[in-house]
Length: 375
Image (cartoon, rainbow, N blue to C red; front, side, top):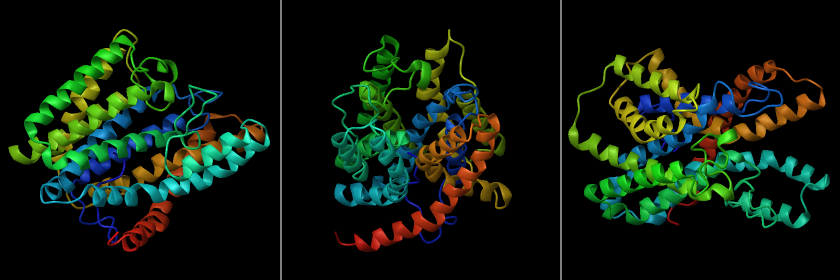
């Protein structure tokens, strides 16, 4: 999903395989962050406005993840790689920055406990589940978020769940079965979203017409979103690998970036919202990823920019919640509510996320790789 599947820890900006996909992931992550930047679109801050559709970046991330993981691990599974080894590799990739986000969120957990917002038992549950990267049950509130300390982490849970399924059946996932599997999920996604089943539509006013998954009430919607998108990514990599299509032109790549950005930014009209959203997720995102995967940017500014965006993307996505919450908390207590808070916060949050990736995430992954060797 958000995290590139298999890149060298020692040389994060070299030897990367799908550089244009790095750039696409980075642009989408920035648009998600813009959606949540405090006071940027409304006062009080709400995830609506010009970035109304940026929640669909999660579906794009799932497709990206399936594509890149099939490239990095599909053959290894067929050669005997164990699910345990694969899942350890995925945890090494995802956990360090998640853990940093969890640590940054602890003062807010303590504050909620001190203010009586949380009872001690629920606070302990949130702490333990958060530390273990598990969704947090809340028996007193059925509509609670899966990850109250980091709202973005819900997609990591579904990502890892899809990864586990991929690992368990990777060597037996033939292409014909994948076509039926992905097609079935596409039909289920369209039917359930249209009918409002499994939590679809419950949060359409705040999280979009296809925005299920972050809460317990919409858990089933998250299953369908990741089930289709992740395995669609696996499938389109199979086609990419076998068809040996010619490289995409710069114009084609620019068009793919522009179309995806155009989908994520403004939102669709009320009359066409559901149909256009489903078409974007089921058809346009996979085609855009196939196009960008076939584009190799020339050495220079464009390639370096795309690589940097890819390096930034996961850190920005997973750390944004805690950092923006801190910005909003300080601004409210200072009595400042302005669009400039969001505009000024964005580059600062991006810079912190990039620094955390370079100076914390990469060394931590290197350490974890050595510590877990032979485990």
